Amino acid sequence: MKHTTIFLLAILSASLASFAATAQVIPDTYWSQQKASEILDKTRRVYLDPDVSALTPGEQSAVGKLIEAGHIMHRLYEDSMHPEALQSKKKLLALPDSEHRQSLLDLYYMFKGPVASTLDNRRETFLPVSDERPGKNLYPAGMSREIMAPLLESRPELAADLLDLRTVVLESSSANLERDLAMLDRFPLLDGLHPSLRERLTALASGTDDAPLYALPYSVRWAPEIMQAYALLIGASDDVAADDPDFAAYLSLRARDLVSDNYEGGDAAWVRGRFRHLNAQIGSYEVYGDALYGVKSLFSLSLLARDEEKSRELSAALKGLQSVQDSLPLGAGRKIQQDIPVGVYNIIADFGQSRGSNTATILPNDASHSRKYGRTILLRYNIMTHPDLFNDAKEKYMAAVKPDFANDLSLEGPFNQTLWHEVGHYLGVDSTSDGRELNAALSPWGSHYEELKADLVSLFTSAKMNREGQMSDELLRSVQAAGVLRILQNNQPRTADQPYGTMQLMQMNYFLENGLLSFDKETARLGINYDIYDEVVARMLGEVLEIQAAGDSERAGEFIERYTAWTPELHERLAERLRKSAKYRYRMVKYKIYNKQWYN
Image (tube, rainbow, N blue to C red; front, side, top):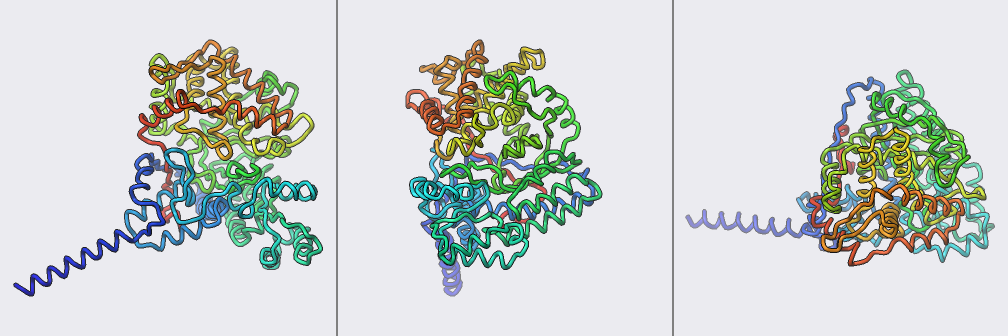
């Protein structure tokens, strides 16, 4: 009996020791389980499993290669956003498996890196890494506009490359230059497609050129990964050559685009091609992550399955866009492409910047590509009409407005508001009145104004369609209710790096100032004056288009400052109401199509 007791005590002691070790397995430099759970308990988990049974064997093979390329794009996105992202993920994965570790992995997956947006909208590291910086990992550490401005002024010939959409800004150190020249030696294809780069790097390395900073194309900065993606896209192109020649041509051209950092060939094939079952957004386009200059694009890959019937119906409904353009407060006379390629799709998988619950995309953003080839609109149907996501949105809307307006929002409203938002990117002003590119002219506010314009064009166009008998009164009311839903904020947005939140707050304040919205102090709810809805939207749209046409960054900043006030007695009270009523504040989207772990 004595030996049995000693044996049982030994087992108990070992178990307690094991429990204690497990409890301490995650160092204190990581977020605690409790802190991680505060966000994860407020996270709606969405699982996408679209029907891909119509795909041919060749298309199925291509899907596998594109998913592999997507994982590469995702790692490049993570690395672009934070210099320690990939290493911190590796260290997290090396820790013993536990519920705590899995919670941190979930946070990393959802935020696509080691920095989270907290419940009060602060950016905070949850892994032991350095604080996030405005230029992310696309500029040298500590870089600011004040530091970079003197170089741009003294060497204006460098500005185009340093502020290019697809270059990383680096210090002209011997280590950097030696590494980059070695990449050109290792990959002759890159050397050939960037004919002047070797000469430039050599001049810096020898001291012939004393510029403290230089611009390096993305393809050279991430050469091994880009070359892997190149091979996968070429392979996917071969897989679908017989089934879908247009899609095959796009994939092969986009493969070349990735190594040349010039997307014109792929953009032309993407916009003008007529694909069968599959579509894919591949590369770096959107600049929202660059809070320093707002000009650096981030990598993404979105793989989509086309809904042919819904796409045909939608294309037929988009005839006559020139009349919409001509009716805008500014922009009449500008000729636009009438046959915008638009498709309704179900997401198969998203990677990089596009991962999440993005509802729609219109690309390319390049003004010259858009002028020559048009743009393509991709509507993500299985996100836009997901019942759980719509119910979450409806509850938020109903918590914000007075009971008289609670039933104005239907599923069709947000769908149409999003559709015309994407079309809105194509309409209006496409360059400044003196011919400059909008994003560069309004830097760092270009994205803020482009998204604001698109929102307002959506509401403006819906009202026009209603007057002309192309949209019912009931649907217009739902679109306008969706416009109110769009501008509801749980927290005060960060002006510099949240263009969406900023432009939504601007709309709310403009609408309040002009009587479209009213705030009931007793109930902390909004009232909607539908009688002046069209008039107020048209007025704000006119001001936004004028600012874009002028290309005056200072004026753009002043307009933003004027309409981003956040007061405790109105905005915070409404936000508090929304926070208390919301079961979910975040979304985590995962995909059935691939089984291997996302972090492999």
